[in-house]
Image (cartoon, rainbow, N blue to C red; front, side, top):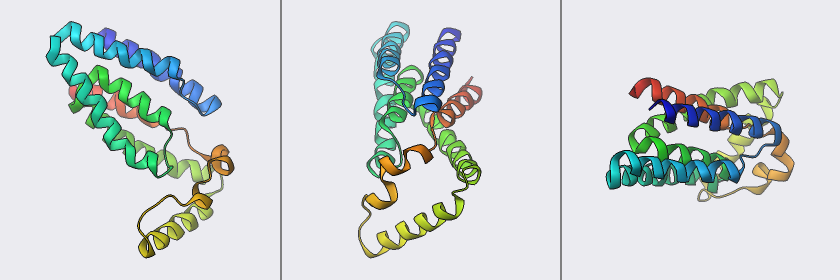
Length: 172
């Protein structure tokens, strides 16, 4: 267990560093982490462990697919938590997901206040909700244009780190 916590902690620190600096979580980090998680699960618990790692990955991809499709989350965030889920399995991954969501909401509120974009964010959310009330939910490009908003987007890896740490505290 200590090795798992160490490896995930190092990966989270690297992910946060690259996410905060370049707004990217590199594939060279997440893919070996994901494969290592599946391998360790298999090594420790056989096919049952392997299945648990795959279930964790599937659960995270399923849960994060909606925010990703809506343009509110990057693929690197999904890949990072999916790779962590390969190590911790679906039950602990669900805890990490929920806590990351709560932490992400608090961090997002602080982010828009500190960036001075709170009034514009409220207007955009209200506009989006009114748009969706008249039409089915869909991507609204002028509210989520990544080239225009990239510098204002909040890195989500700190929320994932908080969720992962809390999941370890609650389950061990």
